[in-house]
Image 1 (spheres, rainbow, N blue to C red):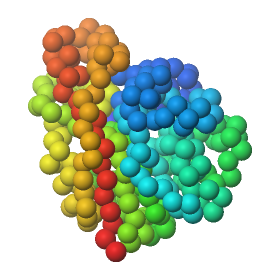
Image 2: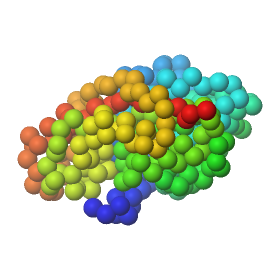
Image 3: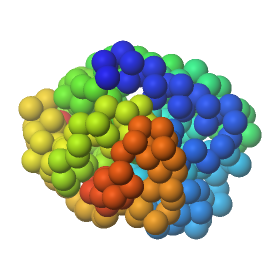
Length: 271
């Protein structure tokens, strides 16, 4: 699948989620059902403080858990979706801080702005744009976060170069994402369902870390690794499209689900 076709596939899938408010986990993006947010690091207090609809169950971790946000910080969320992490960050940066959510799907931006109206937040904004060309000025950001989205981008290296560009010296990155722990059959990797559901060519820890170090980050660390819980609906959601639609054996699909690992990554821009 070409880079442009992959972007169109992902944009279409997430637009459908935004418009239908549907739980399309596994066919429209790497995700966990909303009720499982506690399992990936969010607290009950955080979830209770969100506007209805902000938690769409599209993450694989809590990038704010390791972020050490300070009052007055400027934060950028890559692939901000309906705004869950933006609204939580906004509470931490306070009135003197600023949070910018960037998403390439107009429908998600519209959904996030509706949620913003519901919160009355004045220190959050949402911008339409792509992670490989962020609509953010150079050296203006204290923290870049992202939750299970960078793996969907064809050129991960370009995303991290952009993150480095917008960060101030000493600025930080805190990302939740997924990697694969086994090489998967090409027939599976080339399907739209697999691409949009975060199943990609085997990206090992070393490869992922190299994207950050090659971009120029220092203190690059994988803080945690958690097997992606396939029992939360991932296998079932993919099964019909991959097995029945593409003739991929059920055991291969199950192996793909079991090969995913959720990671938490932090890094710093040198001073």
